[in-house]
Image (cartoon, rainbow, N blue to C red; front, side, top):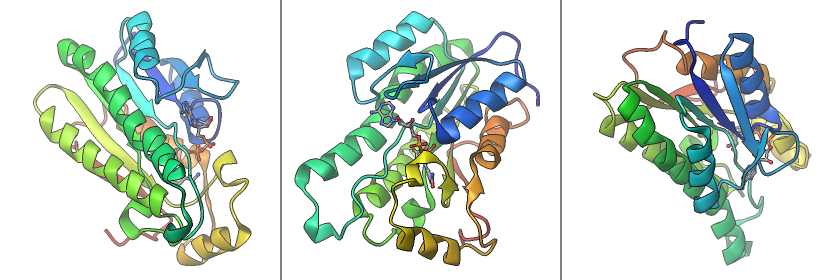
Length: 229
Ligand SMILES: NC(=O)c1ccc[n+]([C@@H]2O[C@H](COP(=O)([O-])OP(=O)(O)OC[C@H]3O[C@@H](n4cnc5c(N)ncnc54)[C@H](O)[C@@H]3O)[C@@H](O)[C@H]2O)c1
């Protein structure tokens, strides 16, 4: 894939799963990558809900040409009536506030440079609303709307903003998921299997490249045929 020379990519959630696979994919193309995560294993420790820490990291990096915002949590997997207020808010803080804070920090530099790529992580849950995952589904729907809004806002700047909406992917995020929920997801997927993180990284890598030119504010499907729009 083709990328501009000398660019720097920041990949949040880069300690594992889709983030780590994306970092590896970009590095394989010669792109300089900094991974950031709350968990050990990333280049930098970062809590994406901490506005000051996010701004400080972007300031330290000096330039961020590509943002892949993969940090996220699945949140509580229970009926809505049984959710605690804090559980709901935590899911939104990580998935929605985190997306806002990262985008807010990197956008001015990208606009100044006249080139940038932002890829956010939505989910099939944003489109369908997974049962017993109301906080996650609603938070990912917010990520979709933020992505569409920002994509339009930056449409003439050279900065393209797109989301990827996977169905279930074999990553640590699903390690603790109720097997019945995973079985339901697999049964709904025409390909009859989960995605590999590398398959999602391939799509993200393309969305970060120079091969994409006329798409922004869009939601790219990676659902094994499950999504109908
Ligand atoms: N795995 C799936 O089935 C699936 C499906 C659709 C969408 N997604 C989305 O893709 C993204 C990546 O998921 P994944 O499957 O790689 O999950 P993952 O759990 O393997 O990776 C997510 C990473 O985010 C990090 N993280 C969580 N909270 C953080 C915080 N406050 N600050 C910094 N880092 C934090 C975690 O430590 C983890 O390394 C998520 O946004 C997720 O919602 C995943």
